[in-house]
Length: 82
Image 1 (tube, rainbow, N blue to C red):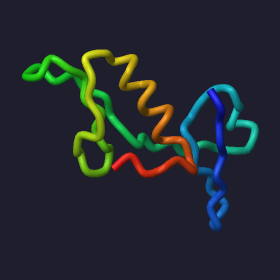
Image 2 (image 1 turned 90 degrees about the vertical axis):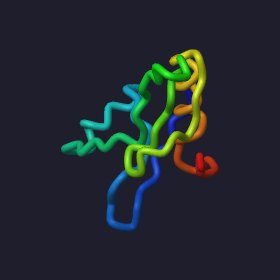
Image 3 (image 1 turned 45 degrees about the horizontal axis):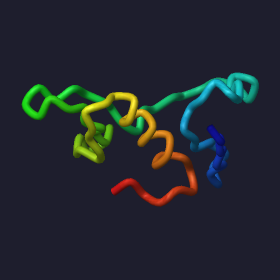
Image 4 (image 1 turned 120 degrees about the vertical axis):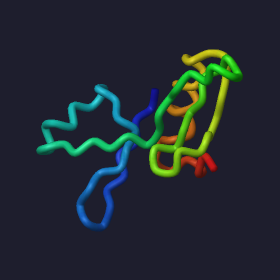
């Protein structure tokens, strides 16, 4: 998986967290989830929810597919998942 770090004008880093780069070397971390993957008992599928709005961004029968979707769509510089 290719990792991208995007530095904001305020000095923060925006990225999809991975341990490929030890971000602790840069200083103290504050980690905020962008999504939450939950099993939907009604549809019997996994839903990727936006952590801010709670809206469903993607769903699939396979949780691994939802994780792959996160990695593909939430990297900085990729189009918005909405």
